[in-house]
Image (cartoon, rainbow, N blue to C red; front, side):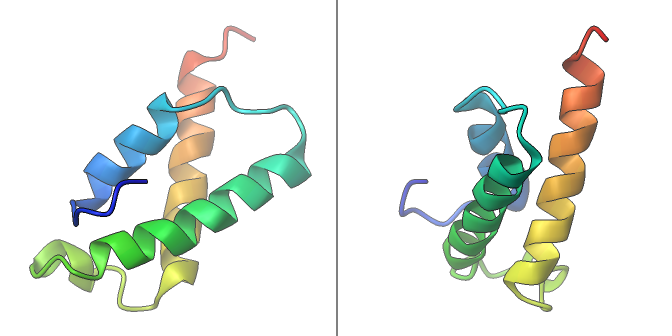
Length: 79
């Protein structure tokens, strides 16, 4: 993730476009956990109402990020 502060949706878009999701649940969990930590730090500099949604910290970013990842996989998985 780049160092410049961005919106949550920009961060998620960059994240989802940067790799192919592995099939192993433990690997996905680890990836999303690291993503949440980095995304929270990246968004912490952004002043505005969108960041207020994540006042719970990186755990909130993890939950929302994991849900978006699963929805993205479901949308693009032919099975």
